[in-house]
Image (cartoon, rainbow, N blue to C red; front, side, top):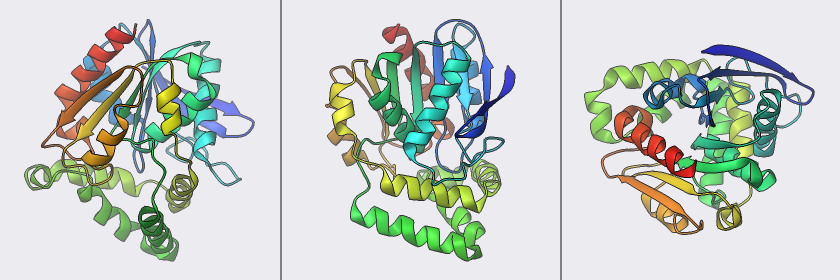
Length: 267
């Protein structure tokens, strides 16, 4: 694996890892996460693919732009990495917020996608209740409440039984989430509040779309996921009834196998 840094005129530094040879799979992390969440999946799928795992703007060594961040900015950062690596097409896997970035990418560069995986993610815009709750979290973070926010949020991403049986995983993810700057957390939530509905993208995207759905997902509920899963021309749907929002930790072998098989189908 090679770690790279790309200087981009709008985004500043973009940090990413690249490994393997062959068709490209691009991995986009979610809110409070970073590119390392994909280590298991990349190792499981193996060196027959070129794996590119990107730290989205404001995470890790990737800069947070000086202007207000948008989901479209995230997609532009991804496009810059692909251009730098001379990659004309890929399969894109986006977890949660990373799925929003993948959809924004699909809206702008649909011909570059061989396949897209929405991993506990959604094409729907935030409803009013969700926007209000995100704004409350922004206010808390702004008032020196970042640690309180993160420590309350992380366990809620997992199925309750997993939280009880895997305290070490919760502690590790909480520690990683606490490393994200308050400014980045605020920028991410503001970008999510402003993002448009992209269900039309799902209807029009020319590539197959995979949905990994947690039956106990509090962030992207099962019912919402099922409302969008029929929209693409070709859908692969996987439902993990005992999993929350974090399949890469809660059910890693199954989720990695889902993506491996989907990639083979797309190519």
